[in-house]
Structures are given as C-alpha cells and as structure tokens.
Length: 125
Image 1 (cartoon, rainbow, N blue to C red):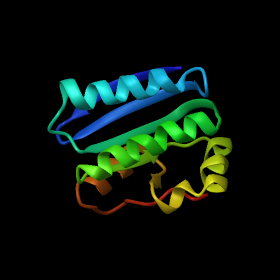
Image 2 (cartoon, one colour):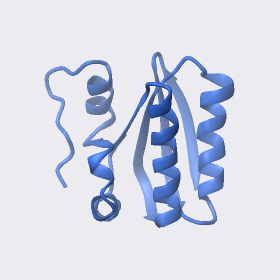
Image 3 (cartoon, rainbow, N blue to C red):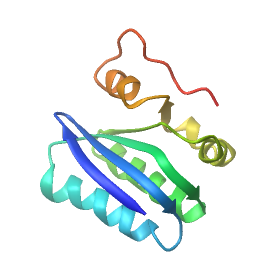
Image 4 (tube, rainbow, N blue to C red):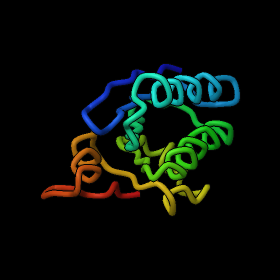
C-alpha cells in the first residue's frame, strides 16, 4: 500500500494505491493523520483518490471512516474519487456512500470541494 500526499491549497489530496487492509490500514491512518496534524493543520478538506486501490477489507473501510469522523469533528469533509468498480461495490455494501461523496475524477472532486461548478458529477455506482 502506498499513500502519496499532495496539498492543493485548501485540499489535501491523498492518492492511495495497493491493498488497504488489516495489515496496511495503520500505515494509511498514520500517513494521512500525520499530514493533517503536522504538516497541513489548516486543511479540513480531504480527497482520497483511490484509482490504484486493488483490495479493500473492513479494516480499510474503518480507516477511511475514521478519517471521515476525524475531519467531521473539526468541521471538515472527506470525499473519494476514481474508485475501481470492485472497491465502489465494497463502499456501497458498507453504506459509506451515505456519508462520503464519490466522484469519477480528481478534477470533479476538487471542483465539488471548492464549491461546485460545471461538470461536477458524482460517481455512478
């Protein structure tokens, strides 16, 4: 599992790839939380770009949900984008789409986080 962090002004983009599971969820959590708490403390918008995620289990879902809860507590927001079909199905079955919006592309998600705009479309499930 790999997480590449990129600040985009008021948004923290985390590109996630590989397996997000029991073994890797702590690393995911530590990487994202570390960036939000140490390096980018003023950012309350998190975009998880998941195009490269190949596997997601309940521990991975819990790690994503934990970031949602953490940012929600401080008035922030988490969205996901570029979900592979099988990962989207896991999100759907777990009911995460009731809490976390999903978008087809990074550009769509960024536009939505910054207040919308033409071309913003929620990912079809």
